[in-house]
Structures are given as structure tokens and as C-alpha cells.
Amino acid sequence: MSPANSQQQTPLLDALRERTNHPHAPFYAPGHKHGQGISQPLIDLFGAAVFRSDLPELPELDNLFNPEGAIAEAQDLAAAAFGAQSTRFLTNGSTCGIIAAILATCGPGDKIILPRNIHSSAISGLILSGAIPIFVNPEYNPEWDIANSITPEATVAALKQHPDAKAVMIVYPTYHGVCGNLRAIAQITHQYNIPLLVDEAHGAHFNFHPNLPEPALSAGADLTVQSIHKTLGAMTQASMLHVKGDRIDIQKLNRALQLVQSTSPSYILLASLDAARQQIALHGEQLMTQTLQLAEKARSRIRLIPGLSVLEPLNTPGFAALDRTRLTVKVSDLGITGFAADEILHSELAVTAELPMPQHLTFIISLGNTERDIDNLVKALTILEGRREKEEGRRKKEEGRRKKEERRSPMSDGRFAQSPTLPLSPSPPLLSPREAFFLPAEIVAADKAVDRLCAELICPYPPGIPVLMPGEIITPAAVDYLQQILAAGGKITGCSDRNLQTLKVVRQ
Image (cartoon, rainbow, N blue to C red; front, side, top):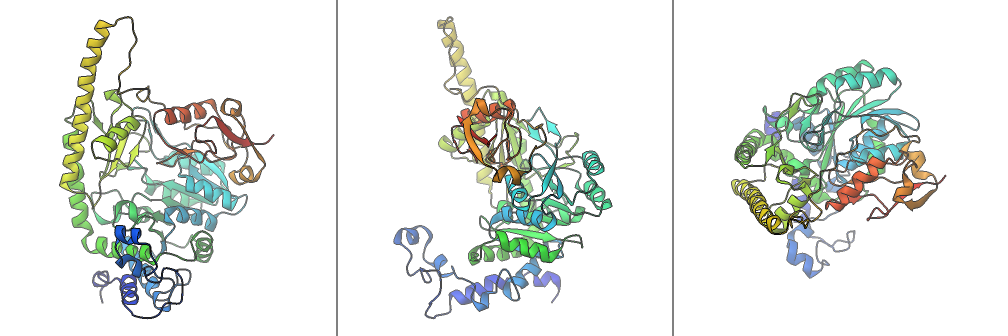
């Protein structure tokens, strides 16, 4: 059978379907026994069929940690579809893939070069591996308040200063769809004969349309991790790890994955990876053409709304390409933060963004979106802009009657203050994340924590980029930024005090 025809197969999905429909007496986990013990409210919500497919590692279903049957076949088909030499299915999300990539390439005391805007999962990998981070600041766009990629020049400088580094890790694309010059970075990294690891969580669709950015593996990555659920048709938490070339020790990688994956993986998630691969392999260009057309319709219509701007490709360092299925809309010129805009859109106008930030909102447009979705988005943003005009008129009349009284707009109520800027220039960590994580810690008032060593991993989420991490000096700018994000309605994760009145620091 030709490779194209083989992509029609779904070996894991087929095996799961067969075992689901095979009548027998189950004396194995899970306890609900093909859904017979599931509570009625869950059946009412999901239906009964899905629970009949919630099966364990039966002989016919293969084993994720030693695949020889259906899982092995499904992973081989995925490798062919995504341009890899080998692929591993992940049921703990891209998080476990990023951690495993670091564990497979770095040990205690080994250096790894990575951008400061790395996802928090990479910091978890540093803590577990004991690797020493060599952070490179990404290029920053102050107009949009977004971080681009690190540049090839910055990569060269870091490797010259640290030629003993064991790996380089890059975010490609960023949450906003920004792609750096990955091909050049790969060539530089390989001159030192070390692997390039790529967090490609948001780029699983790149391989399936010529008008999308170049896939990481095609650009020279040795290992890439993709969240198939983020931009393709798999279920949430279902991801893949791809390897190409001979710089990754496959045995070490397999051992690392056993550390961070569940020994009871969900076959429903695994089967969704198999089905999503078949769908995108057979119909990818058509589906991505439709997705890109929807994105362009959204862009062209939103550009016409006064006070709104749409992120376009920029001729700036660290910005080599833009994933045009990722739509970032600046709302700060309306006098509103992205957090407040997100709250209004979600609560009142039935439109929900992927990522609110101080100045803008980011929307994922994928193969699951429709023309109606785009119409609803444009309509909601138009209403949002119209509120600004009405509010300005009302405020002017009110100020005319009450010149001596300072009055704020009800649309602002503290959420429309000047947008804080992400502090991207921290001092290098004085301790490795692992050292700081395991040292004794204490809780102190936030203002007393400045200039102390952080003992927790704190980041707005999404996007999950740490503002503070274990071993890093707590700066006034970082504390101020986090408190502004919280006051503006953003969400902060990792902090022991959700109100940020106190912080956990390394005990002196």
C-alpha cells in the first residue's frame, strides 16, 4: 500500500472500536466496567457510548510504553504525516513532551539555552533534570507588548559564551503566532553538534499548507512537541512528540517519557490522535485553505472597526513569519484592557478569546471554526467599539455638569488603567530552578520579597510564561506587573497566595 493510501488507516481507532463492541465479562479496571457503573449525570452529559470505549491496556490495544501493535502502527503513520522519523503519542499534553525532551538531553548541571519567554513546562523540566538554564531574552515589540522569537545572532552569542551547552530550545510559534528564523537557528545549533528542541505546541498544522510557516522539522529541528488538540482535531490533552535525525538518544527519550506519562493512558485520547492524524493527512490542505480564508475575512473586516488593530507580519528582529490563522486584536486604543474586553465578550456577547493580555486579545481560528463564528466575532467587536463611543459622549456630558468631580467610566472601573509591560529582562537566576525548588522556603509580604530569591513558579495563565521562577531574583517590576495583571482581571497561577499579598522565597 502506498504511503498516501496508508494514511487512510486508523489502526488504533479501529482496535478500540473492535474491543468496545466485543461482548465479554470485564474483571479489570476501570471500575465503571464499560460505563455500567457511571453515574447518571455523566451519562446525561456525555451519553453512554464514550464510556464503553474507556478501556485499559488490553492485549489488542497495545502498550504505550512498549508499542508493538496498534499504537506502534498509529505512531508510524503520524511520523509519516508530520515529516518525522519517529513519533510518540502523549496523553499528558505537550507539557510532558517538553519535560521529557529536557530530561533526554540534559542531566544535573548541564546547560541548556532557551528563551526567557519559555512555557512553564520547560521550567518544570529544569527542576526535574537539574539542568542550568542559559536564558536569552527574545526580541520585544513594545507597540504590541508581545515577545517575538530569539534571533540567530542571540543564539550565536549564547553558544559562544556557553559552548558546553547540551541543547537549545526554541518556542515556535509563540502564542501570538510569531515565528523566528528557525532554519538559521538550527544551522547554528548543529554547528555545535547539539540538538535543537522546539516547543511547537501551537504549530501542529504547519505541515499541511504552503501558506503557513515552515514546520519545525523541515527547518531543521531535532525534536518538536505539538499540541494536536490546540489547532487540529484531537481531544484536549492529546499531543505528539516528533524526532528527526540522530542527535536525540531515543532510549533516553523513551525512559524520560515513562517518568512523565501516566501508566494508565486514556485510549480515548490516544484514538483521537490517530483520527486527527488521518483527517489532516487526507484533507489537510483543503481544511487549512478554509481556515486561512476565514482568518483573512476576519482580518479584513476587523481592520475597518475604528480603534482596533490587527497584528500583521512585521519587519522586526525575531519576527520571520506569522501564522495567519492566529488573530491578535489590539483593543487598548479603545481605552480598555484585553482582560476587560475578554470579560465583556465572554459574559455578554457570546464570544470567547483564547488569550487576553493587557493590550490585546488573541483568537485561534482553526479547522473547527465557521463563517458564523467569524460573523459573531466581528459583530461583538463592533458592539465593543460602539460602547466606547457612547461612553465617551456620556462622560463628556457628565464632566460638563460636574467639572470639579473626577469621574471614571463604568467601563473602566480599575480595569482600563495603562497597560502594564511584561518585564522580560530579569537578572540571571542565582540558583538553578532545581536547587531553589528544594531549598527551605518562607512566606513574606510581597514588598518584603523584592531582591529575595523566588521559591515558586508564578505566571499569568494563559499563556503560561513565567514572570518569576525558582532561583530568580524578585524584582520590583515583576511584582508590580503581576499585581497589575491581577487588578486588571487576569489570572495568576503558581503562587501560594492567589491575592499576591505574600510571596514564597528561599529562606535566608
